[in-house]
Length: 422
Image (cartoon, rainbow, N blue to C red; front, side, top):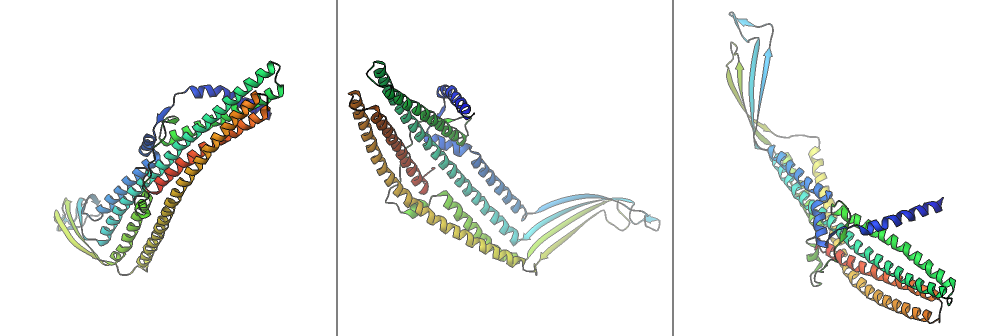
């Protein structure tokens, strides 16, 4: 049963491969892909919606410290009707129209809440910037993954073509009676193994293209259009200056400022508040001793005296939150400085590793050439040729991996220094 499933999968891949190769994929440059992802990704859109929500909260908090007007109409029906000298003191049915004008004069708590809400708008804006940074980084990594996997696919295809050429030569020798069937079958086995690797590499490329398409909010897979230019910052700039522009650090700094303001406003909870009230009233019909129009004005002076420790608890909570955010900021700044140092070392180390891998690939290809000449001259068997081809393929794969590591390290250095995305 397992053999049947494997055969069916092979047939499906064989049928889909020409279709996948024949499709024309949408292409995007590195900068274009990052820009599209930042504009269209749902995570960034949610962050933008959080800004609107924070601005709406500011509007609500501001309204609490501004005048308000309300009106109401009530109909009163009484029975029995009390009379005096034959006239009703209050009519059986009476409509009462009232209005309330409330003018906050001194409301320190409301003013503090408005300022705190405005701080949250800035926090939301910084959070949106950090969300754009994260999506940009994810898109950049996905773009680089497509490049690396395409290089792996190309070298696997080249290894397959070399193996096929070797098989054709070995088979011709066998058909001509000067070679062995063992050499021909061994060479054909290597072709089949390379075909399998090509299909796996092609599927990996398609998955990476699909992932890139999801990030840029496309309707299908997106292919890369060339390698990016990742210009590194100069080594003469200090780490403190490099990480100052990082969006995640700006977010933490803004959160710390908002927490400090909230803690500093705790004393305002003990201040009194003054509110003016004006309430006109219209009666229809009027009673015996009531005027049809009247009004009432009040000045409400409120002093919070005792709350069983609620405000002290709130103050302690706010101070503790300041300490938490301050600790997060210190940790984030140390981590950011460490990321810059590690990224610099990684760029240098991976560039050296790439140079050695390229030299090893050149040497492995030279071994393939020499071994193939020796086989054609009858000095060796094709075991040496196949082994040399495998080692050359592995060496070229190491080059592709090392090149991807260099690109990845350069991107990480740009991210660590706040230079990506711009």
